[in-house]
Length: 280
Image (cartoon, rainbow, N blue to C red):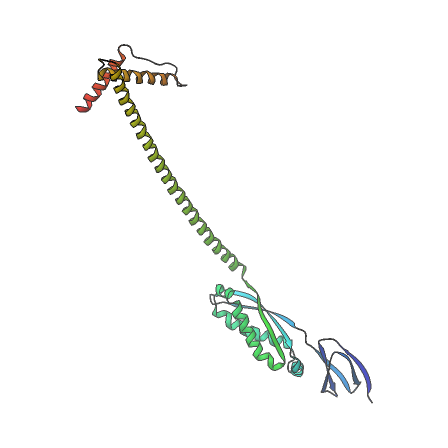
């Protein structure tokens, strides 16, 4: 004798009903009736998206052991609830085994640096392998993600040191290039300053010569009977007194010794002796 019993089914779930141990029907979300004890609740199947994180440890092509975490997002196909419930004892273990198989066949073909660059390719390989297999059992693989790649701590430290050395080498090269540019610009500025200084000295001497020439001509025209020698003696004497004045007005000058006698003749004789020495 059977008695009706009420069964409440949550949203996004179905309940599998068996009659005397044999599959009978699926109860959708809401209130359902089960005839007890002939019928019984065998279990429920959820249509919600589920995630399984699988940690895989293996070595790369350059013999570096690396631990990766693969996150698989999957969902039961509504049209294949019967296969999802009765085909597999543990769907999560089945997915884990396939992830191990794919990752341990792909990672040994890549070097450590290439593993970080090939995350998308590895995730796609896992997704394709799981989709082909799990669809037969009523499961849809929505996404497979490589969420973590964790090599040994010593390997990570070595990679950081290599990167730091590369950046330091680049910084030293840039600093040397900057110093080179600074020295070149400084040399160019110094050369330009010396050139302009030379131009200024040349113009100064030319102005002095022009002034002396004008003074000699004006003095000769203004004073009748004055010879060029008298004019030169006067100019030399004027320059001599200007020199003595500048030396005496200097702050560090305490005493100035001035030779006695005919200063103009002495200066003229000194110049003549110097010219004679050059000729000899």
